[in-house]
Every structure is written in C-alpha cells, then in structure tokens.
Length: 385
Image (cartoon, rainbow, N blue to C red; front, side, top):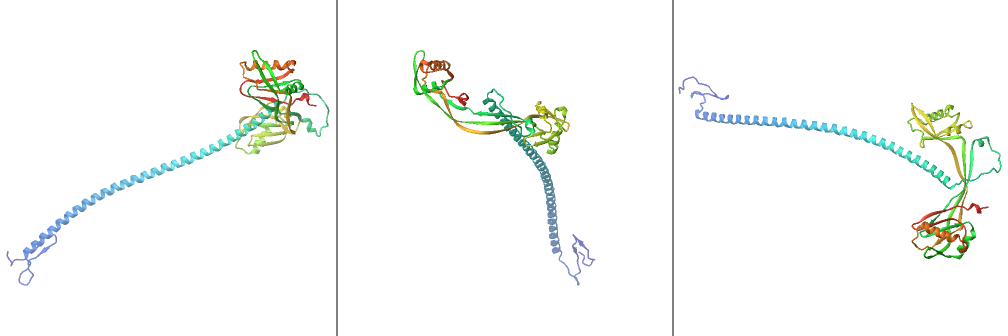
C-alpha cells in the first residue's frame, strides 16, 4: 500500500474508515477494522432477519385481528337478530296474552250470564212444575164481592191457592200399602195384627201395622198477574250506555202498531238482561204478552225479545203438620214367592176386599217385590171440615 497517497474513504452502512498518516494522525489497525465491519454486518443480518420475522408476525396478527373482527361482527349481528326476534316474540306473547285475557273475561261474562239465565229459568220451571204437579183442578163457585182499594186492582188478576205438600213414604222390598175407603176397616185390620193370605198352593202370614209418616207442610200461595206491567228478557248486551238501551226499549214498546202504548216506566238490568215495563193505559200489557217474541232493532241489527206477564208471588199461613193416614195400613213380612209382582198384588187385594176376612173396599194398593219405591200421601180433604 502506498502510504504517501491520499487517504481513500471506505463506506459500509454509514461507517467511515480513514487511513491517516503516521506522522501526526491516528492510524487504525486494518484488521481490527475488518473485524469490526464483519460484526456490524452480522448485526445487520440479524436485524434484517428480526425485521422479517416481525413483519410476518404483524401480518399474522393482522389476519387474526381481521378474523376476530369478522367473528365479532357476526356475533353482534346475531345478537341483534336474536334481540329483535325476542322483542317480536315478547310483543306477540303480550298481544296474545292480552287477547286471551280479554277472551277469558268475555267467556266468564258469558258463563255468568248463562248461569244466571239457567238459574232463573230453573227456578221458574221448578216453581211452575211444582205448582202444576201438586195443584189439582178444582170446581170454583162465586161466594162474595169485595170493594177494591184502588182502580189499579181491576187491572190485575189475583189468585189464591191453598197448597198442601205431598208426604213421601219409602216402601221397602216385599211390603204393601193398602188404603181403604172406610177408616174403620183399616183400624180394625191394624188391631187384629196378623193375617193369613191364601195363595194358589200355599198360605203366607202378613202383619198389618199403621203407617208412620214424616211431617208435612201447607200454605197459601197468593199470585198477582199485573195488568199494567210486562217482563222483557233476552235483551242484547251491547257496548252502549244503559240509558240508551232503556230508551230504545221504551221506544220499541211505545209503538201501537206492535200492540204497545204509552210507557210509564222502564226498569232495565244489564246483568240479567231483563227489563220491566209499566204502561199508562190498561189493556196494553195484555196485548203485548199475546206475542211471546217481539222484534228489537239497534244499529240496524234485529234482535228478538221474550215477553211474559209480570207475576208477583208470595206465601202466607205457612204451617208444618204431622201427617197421619187413618185409612192406610202397611203390610210387612211378606214371604218371597214364585208369583210375579202384579199377581201377588192382585191376590193381596182380593183377600183384603172380602168382608169375611175383615176387609172392605180398597181405594189404592201398591206392592213392591224387589227394590224400593216412593209412595206419596196427600191431605184427605174429604175428612177435613
């Protein structure tokens, strides 16, 4: 190397190496500089390698971040969709629940109305049936006249019924009841006690005892059929005020062409769907009840109202009495035989009709071969003064 020549510059990644003359400048050892240069190159290579690894890590992290963001977005979308579905389901459930509640309320109202109507009709039918069943036709005769307390009395039809309830008696198996026309015959057979009845091929021993009855009741039933009032039922239950329905009913029965007339008062009950109408003039109520069904128009809809007379009933002179049948005997101890029930009853009747056996004319007889049956006793009006 020519040490007298100008120094040359060695550049390697910003590292400047200079050779300085020995005469006053610092001279570096070339070998040391080369070693230093190699170290720096090695460090540079490692740095480049670390840089590449960091870039790879960054790319992988970016990819994972993008995937995570995609997953997060999907989860957020799914969560939002589920939230919307849950809200829709909740709204539908609340709506359905409200509808079910309303239907339940309406159903309860209908059930209550049906119960009330059924109870009212059952009570009316029960009363009518009891009266019709227990009251027989009577011959009537005129007795006297009474002064009316007011003019309204002539509008009403008043009835008085004297009612005595029938007393039930349970007839047991192989027992017989005999009612004679004469009281003395029954009492004589009871005093005698035992009786022998001849059948076709054998004889049976019977015992005659008095009939012990439960207590009975009797009362007077006063019935007044109004000549100025009528009852209206099956009034439609509409979502309008009671005053409007009352006015509509009054207007409906005000028209004379339908048998109505001027209305004095209307009493309407929404719960029972009934109304009571009072007319001013006599005879109008009779004209209305001749037709049991009357058309009723509201909001261009046609309904049918049921019309019936206004009947007031009340009881008086209610009494409890001890029932005693002096013309009836109870035959017990009847042995089981091969004869059928009807034949056995005929044989018993034939035996106790004969005066030679201490009997007499029989008014009624009933024999029970198997099981039990109810017999009913009523007041003996022929012996009542």
